[in-house]
Length: 514
Image 1 (spheres, rainbow, N blue to C red):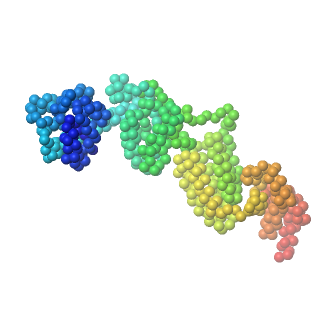
Image 2 (image 1 turned 60 degrees about the horizontal axis):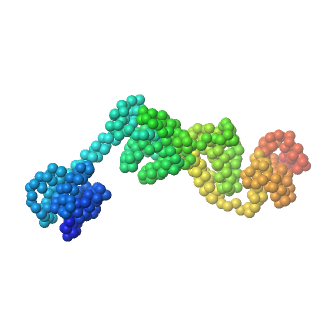
Image 3 (image 1 turned 60 degrees about the vertical axis):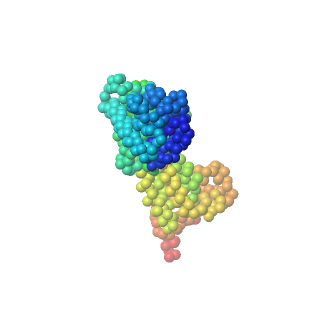
């Protein structure tokens, strides 16, 4: 839609021109009107219309003087002259100013429509040439950038100036739209980014392998600038419905040094799995460990994490689930594990916890099996944060499916848990961590409720479990291992203390009674 400014000192003509023509049907939109030459110049500056229709004879500056003034300023728009005088000299002078047409008053509607159609053709050609020129400029600029980054070419300063790349500063930002079909939509993403940067005059877009690169003339220095740039890009790319990740290199003074900025951005992007916030991630935005933080990699205790995750599911504790996933994240980051190792280890921990849960009952097995199918999706997550959020969402749903535990006190939950897991290496300190209590306080609560210390209660539960296992015909060392006693002699003495006879004697007596 081309824009129009109508200039005439007669109000009836101005309003008549606005109404007698169906401007939208002709491909135009009337922005405003002006009543004299000076007002026409001012409004032309404000509106920059594609077409100005104006009368030659007006008080003050006449139409030709208005055109002459605007042409001297470099204005490129089309002009259509209206006059009540069929003066050939005026027409010749108007043509010398590049006027698109010349009509006599009173204006005939058909002639006006015909002129508008002809001028629209001229405007279309101008737009096509302008677009072609713009595309060529982008192509050559992109070629300069890519030849420096990937071809090691050195460009003379005059060429850099000619292509409009002589900037005070330069910064490379790399972008990835995370999707399995990213390669198919990369060209479309690049086009939309190029349009945004061109309209805002922020920089040039180029191809950078699996990423899309941006060479910025106004580097993103502050956190606010990095967040704002990310938000602008993410909004434009929202329709692709995929996560967007960005990394920025350091600022450089000369275009020949942009390779250093690119390599830094590339190094950051290769660690995209550890990005934690929606922003352009840079070296200065990446936090370094302080002197009082853990130095050196943390050792991953898979058994402890697996048990704690299983406990969270078993006692239906979303709070414990959140804590164990936070511990996973901390250990994985400070342990300097790779993306592949992290996905492999977390998937294994989750799978073992689900398997242990499935042994409780038929209902638990069905629910656990349903969520086991989810584990393969962990390998598709683009970041550690996304992976843990996926796991948290699935396991919170699992806890909801298991239902709220019927035990109405923390001690009843503990008793139920001990009875179902007597073979685990249970300690009061471990359960205190699981239930988020101080161990000494929890021990007092437990004794007040049961009348026995935690260790005595645990021994009695284990002895009852041992009796049932011996009745099934298991050997003494097998029973000892299953109820959590690594030392068979210690189990033997415990059993005799609580039951009154040795484990083997108890098993023999049971056989005789059958």
